Image (cartoon, rainbow, N blue to C red; front, side, top):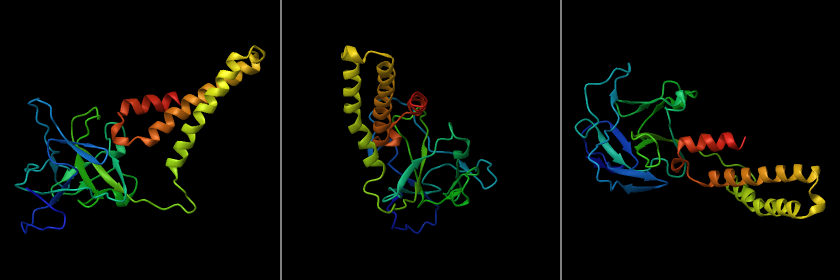
Length: 220
């Protein structure tokens, strides 16, 4: 059973937030139906008691009231990845909340249905559901676009860096030690600015973890 967030069906069952309907993927801010012909069914996460022992219930509408919505509207939505970060390990509790026992911030250790939603992401290398939890956004004074402007600024710089590289590559008088050093420096800057700028403008959930790690190491 699914319901709107403002509607209480009177059942008293705990609420669990889903970003999208079952058999759908989250892509950016949109839900895309799974059109594969495979017969494999991906189960919703297992349920745990407060002592982290598996509960004797299933993640179904028999025990939970599922709410399909985006609880993070107007805020940042961050996907927890326990396969990479130990402190992002999470458990779905029998009361519908998400427990993060290793989270550094105390207020982020227990998330109720207004602070998270569950979803699968097609580009994610694992098939199970992810927890997307909401981070508060804090306005920055005198900020005229923040990270987006900075990312576009890096991308705009790339053609000029490339032009500098080409000039030093074509002119014979500049093919000395200074020119070779400058070409190496400018070439690395152009590559790094291109990669970092594109990554910062791409929604995080669309980037494979392995690609993110590889690009992060290559641009250091």
